[in-house]
Length: 209
Image 1: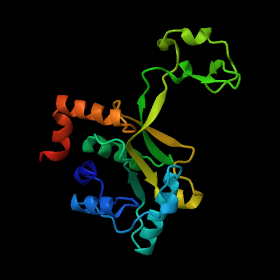
Image 2: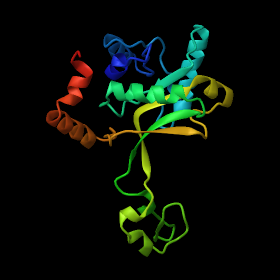
Image 3: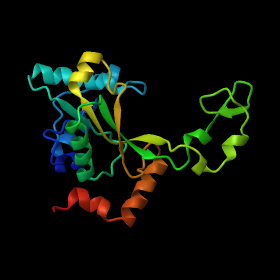
Image 4: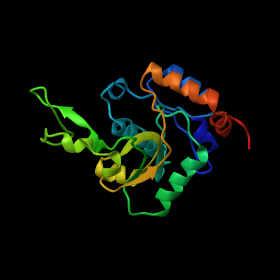
């Protein structure tokens, strides 16, 4: 949230949550939380599209619908506001894409990944090919593949409302440094380690320039 407040291009910062406690904490840090997310779209299997449509409906009622929404996921707490602004400029300056998503290069190509078949054998990911010798080739022999992260997404509100889709089929990639996604308690420990060894992670958000 602090990164959003320090962005030069983000006009308003809103927090979507079903928790009044989190909403109060967000407003204490300078964001806005004028509505709570309904329980029915706040479960483990709820989609981003559901809460985004709720937000857009609220903006419509307030007669202040934005053209773009910058979607910042709480699972990626270390961000550089300047890098976020670069992503926003990239998407808003060229109008041929339906959304922008941040990604980072995978350390191992996804072409070297496997699934387990119903009869308990390994097979190449997304195929029915269980002959794995070719997957043992050096990673440099495979195409680069990228993993979506929560650094910054830029969304087109007109596209969402017209198509009932969040990203569409012409998504502009924004390649970021590799980031840690917070999904487990171990990830918090990793973040604490990063913070203790890199003061810039703190300075870029909290220290005035």
